[in-house]
Image 1 (cartoon, rainbow, N blue to C red):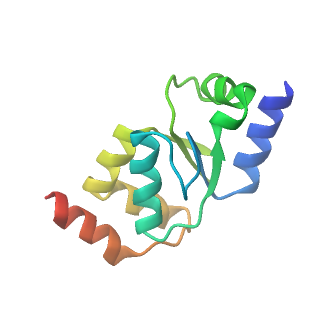
Image 2: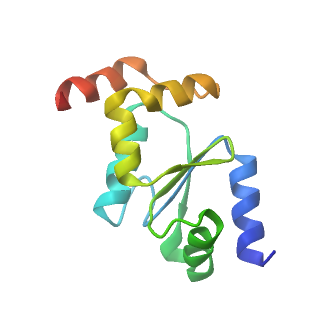
Length: 120
């Protein structure tokens, strides 16, 4: 594996929830990254953020690693979940809650319900 691939694999393995994004969870630098980080932050999920803009090798490497062409990319317990559209759909349908429950990831259920009520 290349250095970027090793770094990506280590990050995904050593953190329960990882968001590869443009910018950081405190300062997203694209709307799609902002939406997913916003959902995770609002739901109180503890997650690691990886700013792909800081390293071109990681930016391309994560696309190759997941075989997914866009950023952001969310990983839960080492498994690729999806990008912005998929995370949005999963949040609104309750599937993201189920995924977190099945993987022992803590989150604020009331906040998740509020997101659905606001978008219902």
